[in-house]
Image (cartoon, rainbow, N blue to C red; front, side, top):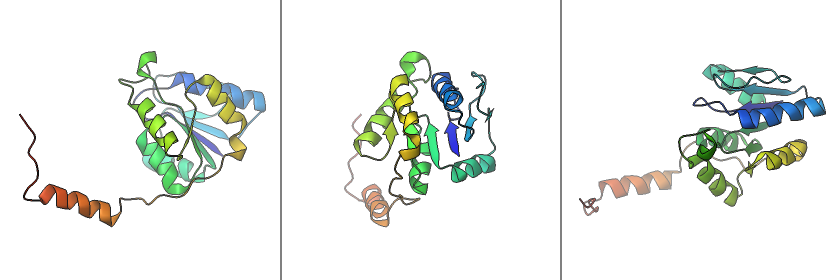
Length: 166
């Protein structure tokens, strides 16, 4: 199953239209989408505006591939489960988000080789056409390493820590 999620803030009609048209054209019956409230409703694939946390977790864990906005929670969840993920960042310049943080997230995670990114509709369609061949990524730990946590703790509690300038 392919699970599509747009997050809980705002709908993501641009991405959903492409996925719905692709699923219709290819006769994919294995796609389910969480589409957000007040957005465009897919004509071909089943969807829900909102999923309760347990429902969301169930769809996410059963999916073979995730298609999503570039939200860090979604990306980290996919990496934690070793699931292939295609992200398309919501763009503030297109009225889909309040700022361009998803664009920055997508660029950085792509540079790290952690995710597949479609920056526009053409790239999303290309990713969808290759969806069955996307490789799984290395599983990441569900929490920060002990050494990172220790380093942060030591920095915060060090007597000589720098104070912010006024």
